[in-house]
Length: 126
Length: 502
Image 1 (tube, each protein chain N blue to C red):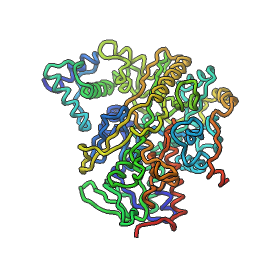
Image 2 (cartoon, rainbow over the protein chains, first blue to last red):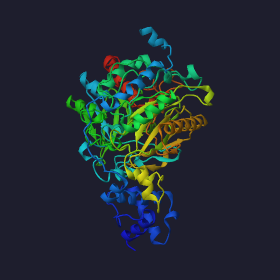
Image 3 (cartoon, rainbow over the protein chains, first blue to last red):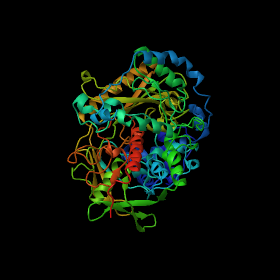
Image 4 (cartoon, rainbow over the protein chains, first blue to last red):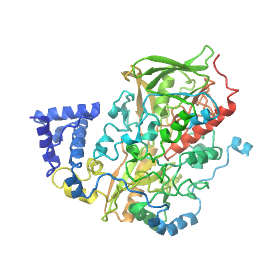
């Protein structure tokens, strides 16, 4: 089987209903790429996903999950719009204004740090 | 921070950095593949990145995986910008709690440099937190707490527990809430040292050489530092002569260099007493959509409710909590909470955008057996011995982790979470590499003195987390840079009196 077919087989087991066969990314760092290679070789030899070692399984899951959730349809289905730039509101954020009475109660409880006497050197410089 | 002070005072500075400059426009945050990138090319684990700019770490003896980044700005490129000072008690653990040792400096002595570096890094937050002595107003107001933060703040109000808006090293004027701070801020809003200090230092005359891996510190016949040797990325060896040498290579890289150089180890403590802040996450899943991917990745709110020692808990010292949203679906899926196979998609719909997580930073105490040594087999791309990190979580820290995870679960349940997932500890969490060249007054029990000068080499200094005597239970960056700023001012003031090589 090709790498794409092996990945599709694993995806069907782990992420059923996904958008199709992910490709092997070309920008994986060497250690991750090596673990993925071992995973695909084991799958090609008939191993089940659950029988993979931790590093091999992690590399496989990373590639499959990243490809799966890069699909706009999948992202929409779980309610994730993907990374996006959103201007900050003017600060302090008016939506947090209701927290001020809560903060005041934190202040009213007083200092919670343990005061320490200054070290001799600090004391002598004051 | 240090170099900027020195060049501003007219001193000549050469800095050797094994990594490269990174343009914020090249960070992966805006891309669809950013979650894969942060576990690959942009991973904080040098063993995962595996580039020639990194050195590998033999970490099979470590319960916590060391994390770092090599490049101009160092690990601040990938940090979370969670900005907090050590508390006064953190400098006095022997006096107050009868464990480890007190620092030779205290909060009051460092306070001016805390204030200065808060300003230099453009911190956003709210002064007046009663878990800390009074501070001046911070440069920027706090970033939005967000819907998840408001829920948990209200819960802490009902519980009578401390909470406070998060303090973040982020410029609100530039932040556009990518939520991908720890993959490098694509907007350049996060105060990483390449942006806050290096550009200014280079413009003022600092000679910053990238792709330059220091191989050893050189000394003269009298035992004074006289420069360093380094290897560039083309494999060429070179030498820089210097009157003063400062190491700032983090709690793994600095002891590695000292051990490679055979220096400053009269105490036998170079590399020993590594502390890493064993970290736990406790994530609550809520019914309502919280858009938990929006905004800064650092803390929406923090809690120091259980920071100070209470002997009734069965351990000493404590931990700080930072509340954040869990961003993208890949991270949630890989956490395993949604399972795999049938049912995964439905479970993910209930998790994505509805999950808030307490990150718990515990104080681990210094222990000689937690250490950095030189590995006998593994080498970097230049053939230098790689560091071996040996680290085991102590019983005190395990009790602390369990206690805090239970309290954090109560916090999230009170806030309305219907499900709570805890990971205690998180193995890949060794961001804070501390204590391996500790400061102290006694040359027999410390590596550097209170001015961060090596006891054994009068013109060799250390300016990173290696010098911490104890780890505290907070993110260390603010204290690391305050110490570096203090060292810079010291070197400028003492420049005529430092014993340099002939």
